Image (cartoon, rainbow, N blue to C red; front, side, top):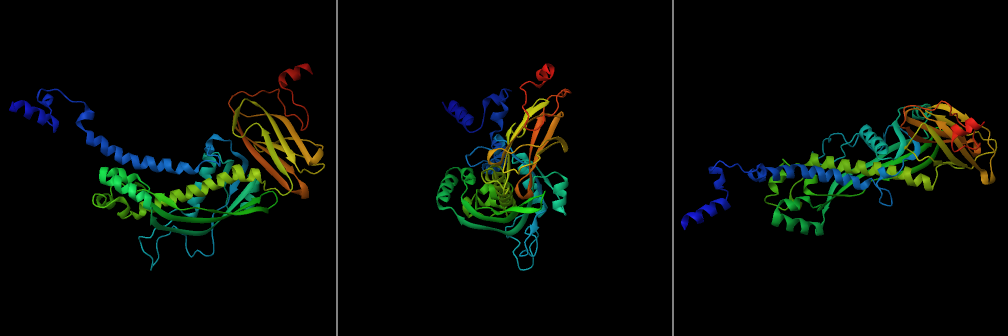
Length: 402
């Protein structure tokens, strides 16, 4: 009776009799701790990546990438530091400052690059691109609809407080599972970055709007604040997560990424919703009703747009990939509204379509959309229709009837 007991006990605590008989166990049964270690290494990164996506949604909670971009081609000037800054916020600490102070790690150029990537990658606008001094001239030369100027006015990073309710949950999970408490966002950090934004009409050089863009406080978990291989992980074996020290470079980077994501998302939301509800143009506006921005079409595209507030005798102009393709005198209807209805022949691939018009007080404005021609061959018998002229549902058939 002793042997069976020892045999079963040995199997339970790691001895497998099948190994002595030359029977190999499956790999996942041989190294369970290896799989657990790999999971712990990758999970913090996955959680961090998913976390920033919460900012990339509109006011209804719909992800930016699921809605068309705003019809603007935006030139973005270099970010300027306000006079209150004696040095860039991302520079190393000066005498008298602690080397353990949290800070915004992005330079002005890196912040602009991040904003451009977000505007382009999350369907913020038709296209965002950088310009340098003289920014107004470069924006006009590159057919921009708007010029965005940003001034960096303030930056402040610090640990603010431990969130009491989260700390209770974090502590309970830490006592029962250890690693479970490391994923709870139990600490609140002040990650304040403030910008002053200015929108300029590049056609006239007139500033049409000025507004602030700023971040809010950020909640971080232990894994947000520390890498896997750090002193804080050792501390977590003895202390609950919210009492462990922070790895300053890691925490600064995470807070900076979060702040940059907040700033970029606010600008996307402004272009997609704020300017649509309250157009920046003083006396006129352009609304491109069809096709949708970033649409995938064939070689022929029917462009429909409405101009409100246009002057009598205004000549709307359409540019396709930088080349003027249609211009005509148009009669302004009731309420100063003008309709554009024309067919454009697209080149293979990506096409930039800009509608430009002069409104009241000789205010020139424009809107740009991007259309994708998925067909390699274009029809040679399709020519742009004059503005205001009726567009046949089948231009090829109409041409044969004439």
